[in-house]
Length: 348
Image (cartoon, rainbow, N blue to C red; front, side, top):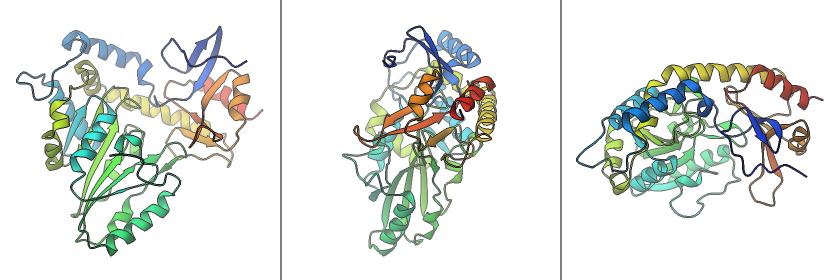
C-alpha cells in the first residue's frame, strides 16, 4: 500500500517525513527554496514585528502603509518594468488585468493559457502547439479589419517544459494595436537570470506589454504581481477590482524588498543543482536550460522512485483518466547528495 501524501503536516523542503519514513522530495514550485530559507524567514519575522500579521483595508483607504508603494517600485525595477501592481494573489493579479483590459481589443488566447487568465470557460484548444498558434495568430490579425487586439498567453509551458518566444509579434502589421498579457508565474525569479519574461518581450511602438505572475512560487511570497507601462498600470489601479481588494501581508513584502541578495544566492545555487543533474541525463528527457523542471516519458518512473524513498511530481494530464506526466523538479533547497542519490536511482 502506498503511503498517504495528502495530509503532510510539515513544511515542504528537500525531505518529507510521513508515516515513519523519510522521502527525498523533487516536486512543487518552490524553485528557490524560499519557504525554508532561514534568512528569508528571519526577514519575514522582522516584518511581522514591524507591520503586524495582516492588513485588511483596501489600497484606497485614506490611511495607508507606505510599504505597498515601496514594494511595487522595487518589483518594477527588479524585473524591468516602468510600474507594477502587487495584489493578494496571482489569481487576483491575472483577473484584475484581463478584466480591466478585455474591452481594449479582440481577445485571442494562446493554447493552455492558465485558468487564472480566463474570462469565462476555457477559451482555446489546450492541445494546439504554441508554434502553430503563433503562425495562425499572425495570419488572422494581419488579414482582419480589426485594429485592436489583446493576446493572452503563458510565458512558458512548465508541464512539458518550453519557454515561448514572442518575437513573432513583430510580423504583425504596424497599424495593428496589440496588448500582450503574459503569465510568468513559473518564470519570474528563474528565467533570464531571474529577470523573468518581460525583458524578452518584443519592444515595438504598436505593442503594449504586461506580465502577470504569482509571487508564491520562486519568490516565496503569497501575493500577485502585474508589470507594465506606467499608463496601463495606472488604468488597472483605477478599476474596481484593485480598489475593492485587500493587499497581501505587509510583512511578506518587507521580506521581498530586502531579499535581493537572498534571491540571487538561491538562484545561483539552483543553477548549480541543474548543472549537476543535467550532466547525468540522457536524450529522452525534455527540459529547458536553466529551468528546473524535467519531463520523462517513462510512465513507470514515479513508482520506481517511490520504492527508493524518492517523491517526484506525477499526476494525470490533461484529464483525470489520462496517463500521468512524470516530472522531476529541482530546488535551491536540494543538497548535492540529494541529487546524486536521485541520479543513482534513475540510472539503476
